[in-house]
Amino acid sequence: MLYAILCYNLEDVIAAWTPAQDAAAMARLEAVELGLALAGRLGPVARLLPTTAAVTLRKGRAEGGEALVIDGPFAQTKEQLLGFYLVDCEGLEAAIGVARDLAVANPDRGAYEIRPVEVYRPGELGTPIQRPALRAEA
Amino acid sequence: MTQIADMDAAWIDAAITSARPQAVAALLRYFRDLDTAQEAFQDACLRALKAWPKNGPPRDPTAWLILVGRNAALDGVRKQSKSVPLPPEDLISDLEDAEAALVDRLDAEHYRDDVLRLLFICCHPDLPATQQVAVALRIVSGLSVKQIARAFLVGESAMEQRITRAKARIGAGDVPFGAPDLEERGRRLNAVAAMVYLIFNEGYSAGGQEAATRGALCDEAIRLARLLLRLFQGEPEVMGLTALLLLQHARAQARFDAQGAVVLLEDQDRSLWNGRMIAEGLALIDKAVRHRRPGPYLVQAAIAAEHARAPRAEDTNWTRIDLLYGDLEQLAPSPVVTLNRAVAVSKVAGPEAALAMIEPLAPKLSGYFYFFGLKGGLLFQLGRQAEARVAFDQAIALANTPAEAAHIRLHLDRMSGEGGGG
Image (tube, rainbow over the protein chains, first blue to last red):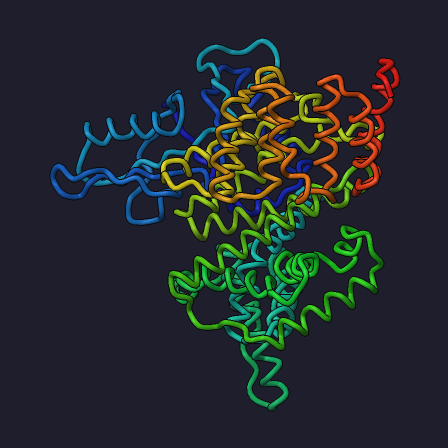
């Protein structure tokens, strides 16, 4: 079974970290990641840009309703996080375009939050790595 | 164990720092008095330092600090009037969901205007710009007087006096507690954005030895800009302002050499630029552009983005930068904008065209360091060495910092080295 582990914290607290604190936290996390990567158990890892960089595509409620792009992250409501995509896009417009296609394929309710990825490490499930992974920044 | 304890202390410190503007702003609305609000927040912080390590951090630190600060201040009032004290904060250290929800409901709709009000009263029109910045750093950001004094390179007691006087000025004025209408909210937002930019510039203009201490002001400005952005999510100019600050601050490590001398954009080691800040800045511009009503901050951010996107100085898209400066001249005309545009024009159309563009600016910019610096540079490129030397000498006379003067002297040295006629 594959498990997604979703990271939650107060982003303004994280943003108040000094670069040294941030680097130290990342180094501690990377040590955990390394153990998983050596065993071939680590898939993609992503660190997202702050929610202030996000927009949200709200699906049209009515039949044939236009999906609406709202500035900001997905606001807490009754919906739950059900899945996610990582898509390589030229820019925000292209990413919104992909979300619109998804909204057409699965209309009615819900929303897609579109958030740029700051750090991305692809990982290799099932392939134990031989040496410490190098940090790749997106 | 110690590591966990250290992390806790760091977490608490960061949580309090980030909660401060919203908490003080909410307490100000409640008590309608700046000193009471600040003392109440201070009190809540002391209690948090005791309660949080023991009981674990609250779900919503900001709500906790507001509630406890409010109770603490009321408690003080009640003690004076020999009334029944409120329950100790231990009992509310982990706010019940219902209670938290109540605080949220009470405050969520007010947060925006609270924080805006707190920042706005620091922009008091009677206060000179540097005092606005000092007061905002003290009240909103919670920097100590000592930190602020260091950032402004003045003594602690002088800064203490300055802040006390400024606060008295603010207190004497009418603090606008009414909920602002749309127009008023926009007016406040403009004033506050300008002040955040001022805070940034106080840090940004510092060079060499000062950069380490004053650079903290840039971080603080970015923190405030992000806060504004979270409160006003759909405002393209707030996106633009935040992007502009991020893109400029991303170059901090490359702007001065080891001796503290200015390193020009084209000579900077771009591998020292902060990729994370650039990514965030570019993402914000992407968002803002969708609104299709560009303002001065957004256009300036777009100009900074053109530099950020160029892997090497020679890859810079100067044609695009020239166009963007053209937009900026329309939106916010000023001789300084035209002067900056001339740099782009010199790259696109050559030094002669740029010189023709800045010559009419002379009467307005006769006291401006950069005007003579650029003029000297353009004349030098055109081989008019004697005139270049005069312009450079004028620039040195007008330099604001030793680093600026040193930079121009370097040009003069280079001219002598190349045997340029004098």
